[in-house]
Picture 1 (cartoon, rainbow, N blue to C red):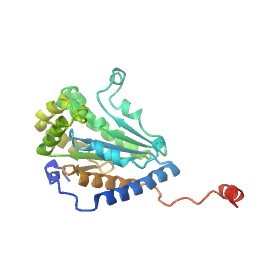
Picture 2: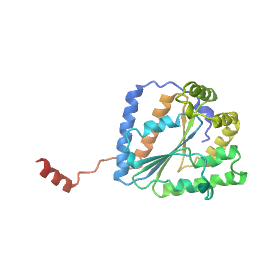
Picture 3: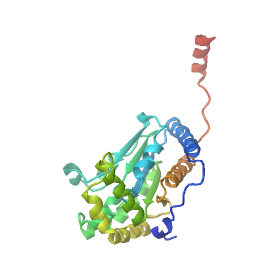
Picture 4: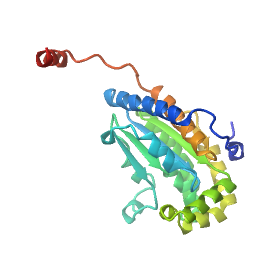
Length: 256
């Protein structure tokens, strides 16, 4: 089924009890990470989307109850000189999680067919080849036992503009915006074209895209975290293991 980002701009206000519902899904996610640790299951969660779409807020709430030793957040920006000396997927392979860990990518390998395409950092032959390279990379990742979740957080132009203006007004948020935000905004039509081709070429049966309507932040956070929890929980046994008999014996000796 074709993904059209225009279908994800309703921005309906969240009607539930936000704080209670957020705590509930975060409680689920806490247990889900434990299940991944126990069963040595790796997972990759990647978020793409517009500037000021709310990716950072989703990630912040996703990991709030997680053991920091068992996850890593990778903010992806322009590649370094060393990374440019390797194939474009190299720097992502280097960051893949060990069994029992979860890696979160704030932007991802899709930069090759989005920003690098639109801004001319990649030649047409490079970004066109990337679709096949990406789908092969993701298929191999999943075949090897890693759960992959691909989220795209979408906002309308009017909502993005409001948030960019808010960042300028608040001196403590100005660090979150820069000239690139406005250069990208001016090329929205080109980015939309690249995004829709990206969905058409990489929304596969084994590695589907999920689009989050980010126009209402609370709705977006609950939707994103719920999807992540549902997907991760479906890929790992969620029954807690029995206590180790030796630990039980030692505890009995210690506590009576």
